[in-house]
Image (cartoon, rainbow, N blue to C red; front, side, top):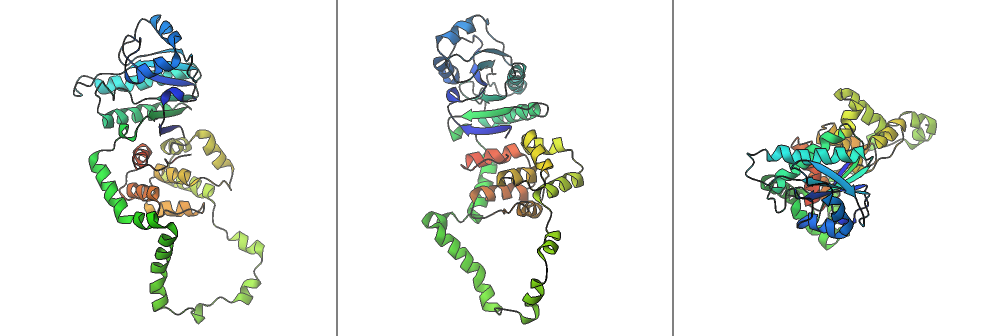
Length: 340
């Protein structure tokens, strides 16, 4: 997907460019800055001396040296002073200028730390919001793989209110206790609970509605195939038209790569991943029922026994369609992100 959040050591990432949350001297420091300088080696410091520092919100580029990336982009984030001193605009500029510099050097993949959220004191939830907005705005007009790399889950925090609401929703729906004991037992109990009232109240077969197997035998395979449902690709394209959206609006909202969308459009029988279908459901702002129908076209469904599905359903039911917020929640609950 064009933008994702992962837990990883940014100094070890195989990308074209790594962004360094530097100080204004560019001569190294603590936190991510110090780690990058140590990983790249003394040649990085020597090149940084020739750059004569960097202003807050701006960015400068060097070689990657001993790190696995081609380039290191150094940007200086703002120190948090309460939010009334242009911190948001400066932080946005850090991401914007770093990404534009990466594009100028033909980078196809870039990894960021969460800028200013360490010793500079920028609240993590606000820092993440700015990062997501700046990256999303850039990806409106550029094709690039952008990763936010954090060392621990605590670096990406939901607001306490939304976290509590999701936690309660998950606890109400998710069959966590049964699955932790024995997944097979969980499946058995769910099946038994579903079938028990049916068995108690209904005959095994309604003779008036019983299938005429002789009649079915006379229907050719060709005739049956004529009545097949529309495929996922056909459903997706129809929904885009019904919503009055452009292809670009939809795949960008879905955090889906343009090339993948082209494959889906050109291949009527394209079989997407479940995460891709869910991303399009959010991009199209579908109701839970309409999302279920789109999933069914690809052989999937939302299950209350899968925590990630429960979280996505929470957002659909509450009319929250921002895929970055959904992925932030999935990340915090240790679930796979959605998109391609």
